[in-house]
Length: 526
Image (cartoon, rainbow, N blue to C red; front, side, top):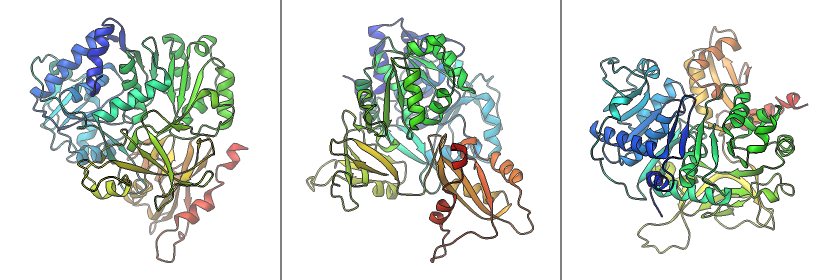
């Protein structure tokens, strides 16, 4: 039984070398050929100077080379940093700088925009570009992907199971996104745990529509490798493309988030698409009851798994499909290899029905936040009762999510205990939105809050006061924000005010604004 994700690939080759491993819009590749491609990419990275522990960022749409690059980084002993292809240059710049990435694998089309962000590519030892001629950009030499994978030779060094494997960047309630560091062991045990309760099989055809920068999205890669299944990649613009792909590729497994399921539930499904799906999963927020009911009617023979997870612990709970009719609002119970507690602030267990913070223990707890020991210490705490001289103290992660547990042990999500916004399954820091509003020069004060929205989970409302001699102008402000922020971070509503409420200590009163805007989108649900 392997402890390293990259070892799942040769294991799959040994079982079925000619089975199709990955399919993208243009081509497919067998497990045997994917294994050879990963080997060559890993040796190519080593030849470029990537050494064990280096961070290698991967930024591109979903394609076979992206899967190969991420696995090759692990095989080279480095740490993979998957970056959401939807992010714009300012967010990419932050991730490259914060992670200290020494190499970047991307497409040639992304490089000019990144260079426009002053110094964004400084510090990189190497840039590898898919579909790139190798022409220099701003004095930087770019290595084409086909030259990278022409290498044969040694790799930098085999990592240990508890070494860092990947950094997933996720927003907190304040500041720029922070990197959550997961180990090789986290990835493998997480894949094994999820594959166990989903009963993943080698004949599954898994449709990957979620970003690999999202731990839930990358798990589609990991569980497919674990089972030796076929992974079908899709970056879609319209939800109809998802249904067409399900039908054309005979998809048996699909993971989604509430906004995706809301879109899909509103479509007429082809009969073939409805009959091939063996299971679907939901995480990243609660699925609306109406959407769940519609999916159950559309997919009567499909198992529907409602799940909950946090990047800091990979995956935490799932609701067995047979419990769906009785507990449609539940996030279920602990997945295999996880212990889930509901605790009071003082660390004591909550009684049944008593709200408390969800706390995760076990081998899926990540290594903490990249280069942020203070924040790590706040969220990752030693498990009580350990010997004082424990060589490697076990830690538990406090999620920041308030839940309750019923008498049978099933959990129910209540809300967050901080200001973080959860929209379209993305975690958004209000500070990031506010900083870009200030940078526009159009506002004097800015506060971003998340309010309930049936389709998005939460929508961003931005309350602002105009800068001196500036007239309120939604279009102008949104245009400025749109040049610097990805679409999911843009406010759905802007509220111009003469002044914003403040608390007695002079801080912006976010709670008052949230309460005021609570029903902003209620009319859309009517």
